[in-house]
Image (cartoon, rainbow, N blue to C red):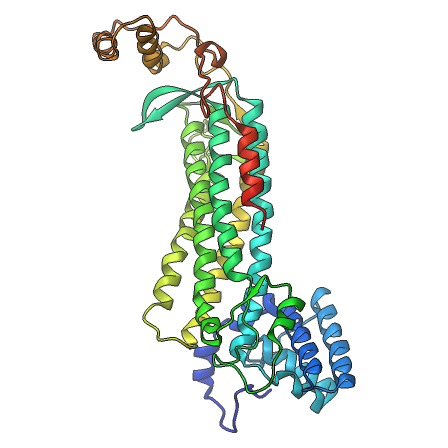
Length: 435
């Protein structure tokens, strides 16, 4: 099979192996999008008079056959195919002869790969949106279920003030709203049509770029042909930043779960089949899932920097360096999906300790602020109350006899343990995810 760019001189095997690498394997996930882009392109060529209507119909039918083979899992990248674009064109030419060769008129492999990638990333973002929403709903359900269960809050890893499981779960739900904003921003950057920019400088053919924009469902165009090519790398960087934001939230949740499972805390637990044991210590229940998730999300967070380094210091226009972007981004998308699914699975099985404070004076210090505030209400200046209680704690004389329930503590302002605002947070997510 001859490379699309071949002009009679073949690259050496060493050069081809080095420059192509595992690109064929990565390109397999672009196959349906390459067909989708080609179908839109030839429909446009027929409309502007660059392809006879009868030939367009023949090409459309053959592309539909290729699309069906992809959907059935029968499509194969042949060993000598350079990439998905050459494979599709070869199949068309093999079946239709010279008609198959006409599919490339008015486009370059540069805008062809760009449109494939944007269609793929658009779908990947929407899939991630669905998984984030599933996790969000799970967290909101848990927040409501355990809104009255007190949980010690910590600052500087020291017992600080009363929190609740409702607040803890709800905090991660709201954090996902910010992540969804990032995901929506990435979607809007990706959802622009580059087709027709060719190699980065347009074409002398009268291409109807608005038509292909509509056929492919893009929200807008990359109007300037040079800017369209400059979106290579930027689109991946935006998606990586959005995934890094989600990964950061999951990473912190995983860290909390590792700590809260610890036998010194015992705030939460999971069934034995979701934890692992020790080869020597029979009492161990290790949080391996959360530890591995912590590691994997750290890796996802790192790819923004990797993409930035790969794409920096390039003048405008296409550079072969960009091929490696797929090798960075595609596995990260898979990892992100896997982590979101696993987080939901684990939370479906979480066991909350609803009796953390029972007979445990060790948590009394977290109620010092409650006592200080109650003194302030009776007229004692805050600084005097603070000093008095601080001395009592220092001398080991502080004890708390007041209410240790969410209702009894009387926290009522927006966002406090007595007013979690889960409804408002749900509305925030609905707005953030409307893209």
